[in-house]
Each structure stands twice: as C-alpha cells, then as structure tokens.
Image 1 (tube, rainbow, N blue to C red):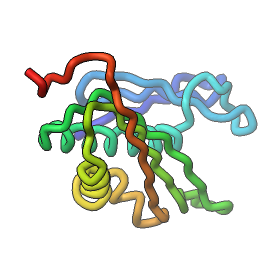
Image 2: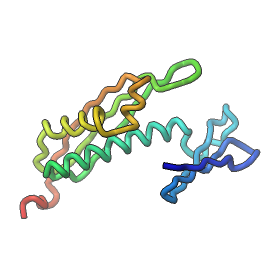
Image 3: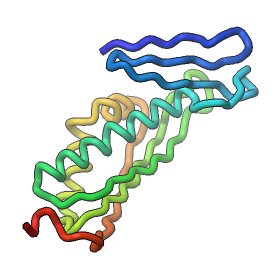
Image 4: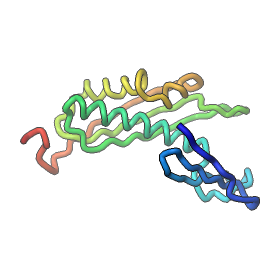
Length: 149
C-alpha cells in the first residue's frame, strides 16, 4: 500500500493526500493550529477510516451469512489523551444495521469478528484505546427481500 501527502502551501496547514488506488482527499488543521478548517483533521481521518473498515467487514460478513442487509451506519465517539502524543484512549462504535429479518446473533457476530479478526484499523487502535461497541437493528419493510425470490 502506498500513499502520498503533500502540504498545499505556506498559507495554512492543508494537505492533499493521494492514495495508491488513485483517490485524493484534503486534510486541514484547526485555526488555532494554523489551519483554515477547510477539511477533516488527520486524526478525524484515522477515526473515519476505522469506522469504514469495520462497517465494510460487517456488511461483507452479513452478506456472506445470507442476511438481507440493506444499510449499515456506524457512529464513532472517541476520546484522546490530554498530553502528547494524543493517541485515542477510548473508541465506541454504535452500529445501526438495516435489513429484512436480520438475526441479532449474526449482527453481533459480524461486529465481533470485525473487531477481533478482520478490521486491521480497529485492531491496531485497540493497542492504545479501550474499544466498545453497541448496535441496533432496523427492520426495512419497503421492498421485497432478494431472498424471497
């Protein structure tokens, strides 16, 4: 995996991040740190990446388990150390999984597998942060299930 991060100039603290897969994202700092608050902070990107990694796993595991998953959202709340390095010390993941006839035990298992085996980001952050999770299931009755066919 490769990436490149380039400072965009001398008038602030914005950085252009380019991934090896050809995508780009802007990052910026807080005004008190010389930034202009134009984009997410780098540590917010770490948190976003962790949420994306885990949500990806949950959807994939549920699909492989023949669950009719139609939506997956994860809300993250994190705390950081008060002194440098300001690592994450606590991260809570709250999953909202939408689907038809989803089995709670399979949703719980998918989340656990992500956090214990598959999500490299959350497993790495667990070295410094206390991790916790919760979930809720929302029944989607809008369309016929693809499994009803």
